[in-house]
Length: 501
Image 1 (spheres, rainbow, N blue to C red):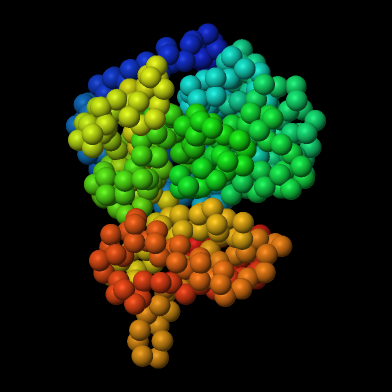
Image 2 (cartoon, rainbow, N blue to C red):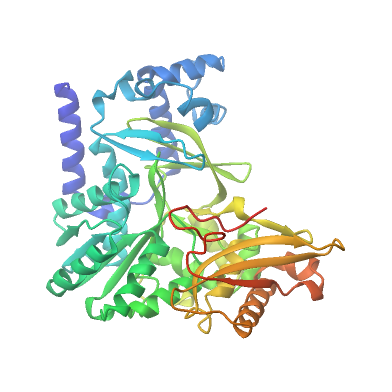
C-alpha cells in the first residue's frame, strides 16, 4: 500500500464525513459527469490489464478516445465477454487484489457465483444514496434511529454492504445505531422488542417480501409497529403501490412518500439510484393513471422509478436496456447490466407532468414546502423473463400482483403466484394462475372466484393489450389455490419464479 493511496483514501473519507449532503449532491452537471467518466476510462485503459486486453481485442486505441462522443463508441462490457473472460485480479485497478479490502458475491440468474472485490473507499458514493434516504425521507439527522439490517449476511452483497454504508452515516454524526440480525426473523423481532423503545424511530432494511413477512409475524406476536415509527428500505424486487399501501397500513404509516424507499442496486455496481419522495409521488400518481404511465414508459406495467447522481453512476440507454459506468475496484466502463428500462432527465419529467396537468409538487400530494432535488430519473422493469404471452398480449406479473393486493384478498394469500397459459384439446387457451395461500388458510371455490374477478379487473385496467386482444370469454383466469409451501408451485428454499412457459 502506498502513501499516496493512504492520503487519497483518507482525503475521500474526510470529504464524505465533513461535507453536508447538499454539497455532496448539488445540481448535476452533465458535462462534468461526462468528463469524470471519460477520465475513469483513461485511467482504466492504463491501470486495468483486462481492460487493456479487451480494448486491444476490439482494435481500439485508447489514445483516440479523447471526448465523450468517442466514449459512446466504445464496446459494451458484458458479464460473459469481460467479467468471465479475464482473471479477477486483471479486472482490478492496478491488476491486483491488493487495492481491495472486501469481497461480495452474487449468484446471478445462472447460479454461477461471481465475486466482486471493492475497497471501503468505494462505498462512500453508495453511502450517499443511503444518506439521501435517511436525510431527505426519514429525517434521521434529527431523530435517534435504530437501523435493523434484514438482508442476508455473509458474502452476499446486500447485508454487509448495507451495514457498512449505515455505519458510515453513524460515523458522520447521524444519531444512528445499526443492528445486524440479518434474515433471522426471530432475532429481528427480539431486536425490535428490546431496543426500539430507546429510539425515536426504527428502519427495517431488506428484501420486500421478507420485510412484509417480518411485519406480519410481528403483528401476530403482538408488536404494535406504529409505536416505533417504522420506516422501510427495500431492494431487490419491483412492487406495486398497492403493496406499499398494504404494508404501510400495517405499520401505521400515514406519509407513504416519506416512510419508505426502494433502492436500485446490483452486486457489481452497488446502489445505482434510490427512490425519493418526489419519485414515489410521481409513481403513485402514475399507478392511478395507467394511460399516462404507458405514455411515459411504453409498457402496461409500472417500473421502479428512482433518481440517480450521474457523477456517481453514469447511465446510458442501449436498445431499451441500461448501461452503467462507475468507479470501483473493478471499474465499470459502459457495463451492460441488461436491465430493461430507460432514462428521463429531470426537466423532461417536469415537462411530461405539466402535459398531464401537474404544475407543482403539491398536485402530487407533497407538502407545499417540499423541494425536490434536480436529479435525473432511471426506470427499471422487473421480472422481464416472467412475462407470459396470451392471445398476443404480454401479461406481466406486476399486473397480477395488483389483483392479489386488494384489501378483501390479502388476508388469504401470501402474494406468491405462478402465471402460465394452458391449451385444451380443442386448441383453446386459458390463463392459469396458481396462488399460494397463507399457512392457516383453507381454500374454497368462492375464494378462487373472487380472486379471478379481481385479477381480471386489474388486467383490464392496467393492460391495454389484454383489454383489446383477449376475447371477453377468455379474460377471466382460472385460479388454483395451493397450500403454503406447496412443493409443485411454491417449494421452500428455491428462488421463486412467477411464470412457467
